[in-house]
Image 1 (cartoon, rainbow, N blue to C red):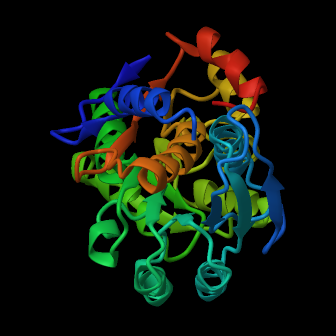
Image 2: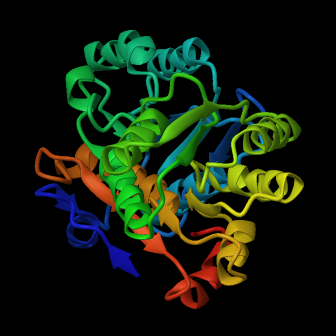
Length: 330
C-alpha cells in the first residue's frame, strides 16, 4: 500500500503507535437521525459516554466503516458510544446540541458544513465537553474549537489523483460532486483541477442512484471529450460504470473511497484506482483519542491533524486489500 507524504502533518502510523502506548498505560481505566449504542467491552466499563455525530446520507456504505471502527474502539476502551446522523446541516447541528444537553463526556463529529455547525460546537466548548473532528473539516476544525482531527487532507488527495491522471495524458476529467455544500468534496475536485486544468465539475444527487446514472449518462453522451471520470465515493463509482456503459464512454474511471463492489471493480480492471481515506481508522481513532483525552489528558497529533490518507489502492495491492473490504474494515 502506498501512502502519500503528508507534508509535515502527523502521519497516522505514528499516531496509532501513540494511541497504543497510551492505552497500555491507561488500561485500568441508513436513514437520517438513526441512533445506535455500542456497549462497553474488552476493558470493562470506563463510565464514559461518547456521542458520534455524522452527516451520513442513507444508503452510503462508507459510513458503515466509520461506525465499525468507532464501535470497535468503544469495546476496546469500555466506552458507551451513541451514534446519530443527519445529512442536513441544521439537523446535524441539532444532534450535536442534543449531545451537549445530555451531558456526554465527549463528542466526535464530522465538520462538513463548518458555518452551520459552529454554534453547536461552541456550545460543547462552553459546557466543557471535549470535541474532536473527523472525516471533514481539516481546514476549519481549529477555528471551530475542535481539539483534534482525524482524516485525509482532501486537497492533497485531489492533487494525487490529478497528478496520476496528468501522467496518463488525461485532459478533461469530470469530477462528480454528490453532496452540495461539502467542503471536503469541493476540495477534492479543486485538488484535481490544480493538476489538470481542464477538470470540470458536475453536481449530482448522491441520494438517488438512478438520478446519478442518468445525469452522468447524459453528460457523457453530450461531451465526448471527457476522458476521465473522478467519483468522490465508491457507490457513485458504481453508478458511473452504468452510465459509461449506457453512453459507450471509453473514459478512465477513478474514485475516492472503497467498498467491496468498487474493490472488485479495481481487481477486474474497470476502475483504475481508488484514493482511500481509511474511514475505519477515522472512527476508531476519534473515539480512542477522546477516551485518552478524558482519562489521561492526551493530545493525539501534537496540535496538528492526524492523516489517515490518501492511500492508493490499485492493481498492485488490491489482492491484499479486497478481503478487508468484505469484512467492512476497508
